[in-house]
Length: 385
Image 1: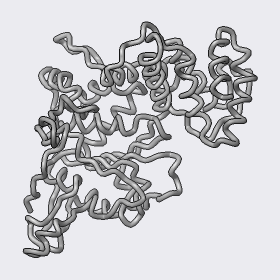
Image 2: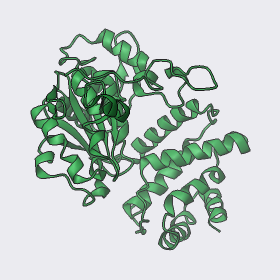
Image 3: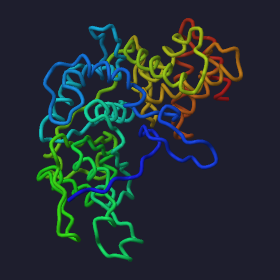
């Protein structure tokens, strides 16, 4: 059955009515979708890509992997890395999407699951917006289809009254659908994906019809390691996925590089001036997070207690971006310990009772004794008090 088209949304490349102001275009969005933000890289890759492409793919698997991992094209175009990590992980993820199995990106919070999912969809389909956000209240209609009740009451169940889900639209167009936080979705709703992923069809019994997936369709889901036991996937559904685990950055240098890149991108989108030199403070944030996360100092000599939070790379990016905003608006533009101290405290102390003890002990036993960290210690002590 034909699937009704839906109204364009901001970031879709189409002007949208923003009310009192003038129409908004994708380039004016606060956070453009990947296919718009990196359109020049995708176009350059498509022009240079002479390798076989699966049906309806915008790029070959090799070019998709290059888009995520970065590289320099023959014409001199520099493709910025979107994911810093083992190449094999990206290659397995891309290859999975070229088969009939769906892809499940699994990892602790802050390991770039959503980021990788978006960029994979953008590179493969040129559209990362076919998204279902998983929550405890996600209904079955979000994955299958719903109804325009005014039309349903007026004319009964017809094709015009049907409201297709992002998954249904992806099936009919041969694109990549995305489901975020799959394990947060109730188990009975999760299982609506089984027929879609195994039979590549979505029945619409009210109309006596079905939507069959066309070549190019696949699905990327993300799930949080810490959500195990919330809504476990059934064995039948899990078999439909190839699971790829995204690890935390392997080395401090890799994590510093990731944080610096993302902070620079976010700073440009927020019109924040680039700091003269913020890498020292970024390295401090990463060091603190890694030591508290691992339960041991970098030199391996001192055991430390870990707080209740994850202290992920994404949280480090948030802390540094917040510090950069403080430095730009209330300082001299130079990122200093005082600009990041409050953000670190907020990230570490999630449980006011237990985590505060962990943080104070870390300050006194590790930070206080570390050479070159006196200014950082004083700034953290000030906000902690």
